[in-house]
Length: 284
Length: 324
Ligand SMILES: Nc1ncnc2c1ncn2[C@@H]1O[C@H](COP(=O)(O)OP(=O)(O)OP(=O)(O)O)[C@@H](O)[C@H]1O
Ligand SMILES: [Mg+2]
Image 1: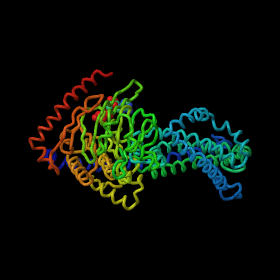
Image 2: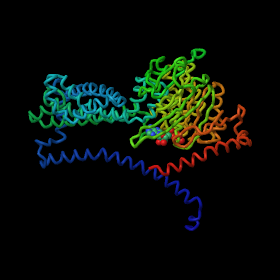
Image 3: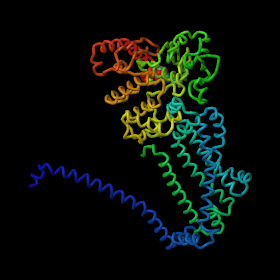
Image 4: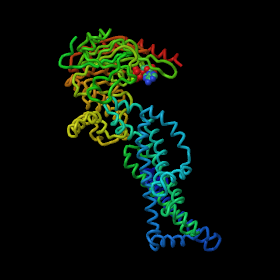
């Protein structure tokens, strides 16, 4: 019998077919497993944390139990007056970051394109930017507050400055690295200077501009929190700083988690915008 | 000498000229378009050309679409000077299909880029005649990958038309026609990264055709194509040329292709490139490609061109071997 099976021509074939099917199924179940692991690992860690606190291994004054943080979260969202509520802080911070970001990014892109295309402008600006870029932006926060006061303007300004340099450098590099041939095509087909910017320089540099925007948004969040800690009566940075001063550690954790979530969600959004704006980029 | 008939204007670029002004095309349209980077070019009307010292050859070829006189180009590279072209004397009448062959690196692309106004010559003179200001003077099919990765096939093909402000519907029709002609109808909304190398090259050809220029400058446009598409596009090119009587300057490595398409084949020397032979191709048109290729006269002429070219190819190879 077994010998007959061995020479049965359909046997190996069906085994091959089954092998492919199993391979597909195996890949799918591996994917499910990976997803589950990604979800369960943090949950397990939180559970472990909770246990450590309850068994008094961890000091609850510094590492409050996740359950009590959730309780504080609830209070901050639903119980306290709007003025002190978490959604208010979040909205205030978000609008500061967004305004500052736009104020920095838009002129940076415009100037970066010109720098990338006009060697004279590049030569003139390069040393200035080279000198200003390395200054940690936090260091000029006092100066910015001196100039713009303690209100919203100073937050917008410091964020705009931080974003501006990141995006400017990325844009100029992106435009300068566009293949010459595309500019030749533009010239041969009669594109004006403005059309060259609009149809060649900008789209050609967009992948690098986006890299700059990503870095810029990271800088914006950093400067946002810093500025709110130093001089503000609202925002996530203020919430964290305030809870340090009143020693309400749970609130501090709520602020931290909210900022982390803000970061994650905004980078997701940037990803989505990028793939919408750059349909021509081959996806990896 | 008075101005040319029917208000035609010539654009003359003279290397080393003291006068600095913009090409006529640029004056007329008020946009940045052609040559004149280091301020060496000058635009002259036919009358002004008559007052020029020298330039006899340019003056004496009033029907020329393209005329050059002792045209030369030296590249100032970091590791020294490269003489890419020297003493090119060339007259291409309006409506001629002119093919150029020559060994690799002899300056064919450089010559074409000078004609396109993308490169400035450093010696001699160049005259281009722009007969109809409503049409672009020239469009180039580049040797290397040159379609915009961020535009769909359609937008790439319509690029020149859009820059010329050809309106929506008319543009769409022209684009559709040429996208169809190069066999990419199914890919009209695809991005270049979804296309093969040959398909990209066809987009580049369609873009130049769609722009409907007076002069088509084609730099080995079909080299990357498969045999079938090459034949189809050659036929299409011949059809467009016969209908529109454009002037075509066509660079190729294939002697067969040059003889099938051209009115004339120019053979260039090895670098520094200049014209070595000017061989008329007088097969009747319209040409039946395969019958033509099978005829003894074709083989004879092909041999003639090859014997001119062979020495130059050998010289180019020898020189490359000694170069650092
Ligand atoms: N931008 C440049 N700077 C310096 N040298 C250049 C430049 N462009 C071309 N050259 C040189 O000029 C010469 C002619 O180049 P060109 O590209 O015109 O050759 P070609 O005839 O088109 O060759 P191929 O058939 O291989 O395309 C070469 O020696 C090349 O090295
Ligand atoms: Mg070439």
